[in-house]
Amino acid sequence: MSTVVEVPGGSRIDRVLEQVRRRLPHRPSAADLPALRTQGALIVDIRLVEQRTRDGELAGAVVGDRNVLEWRLDPTSPHHIPEATGTDQLIVLVCNEGYASSLAALSLQKLGLARATDLDGGFQGVLALRR
Image 1 (cartoon, rainbow, N blue to C red):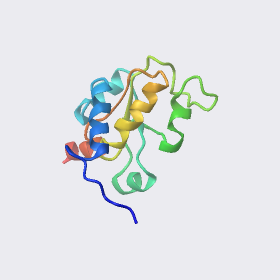
Image 2 (image 1 turned 60 degrees about the vertical axis):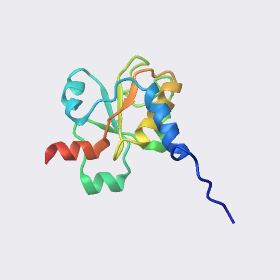
Image 3 (image 1 turned 135 degrees about the vertical axis):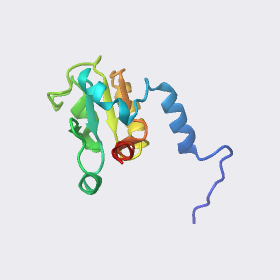
Image 4 (image 1 turned 30 degrees about the horizontal axis):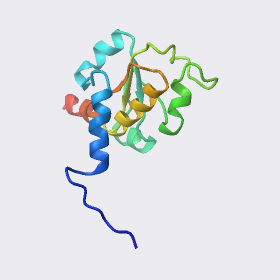
């Protein structure tokens, strides 16, 4: 039987997320997306297919399944997508609410993609703008 351990100051994952976000470049908001697209940023939708089906597609984004994201966005990988052009490229990851994308952006930074970041508020922020 497992035991639940209380962690002072919040859960471990909340603390990790806070640390990760301090390492990310500016986390843009949904309102920033049009300008980011104009500037040539690679917007990558990492939401589950069920979420994309339920809430809709993100215009101008490529879909990058989380389980192969690093292989698809690493320009040195033989499996990278054509849109992944270099290590200095601005990459903005979009998940449903802006949590998993923060962790994924750090993983990309560890691959040398220093300008990888994520959308603050995720796709739910995009939907809120539409209302």
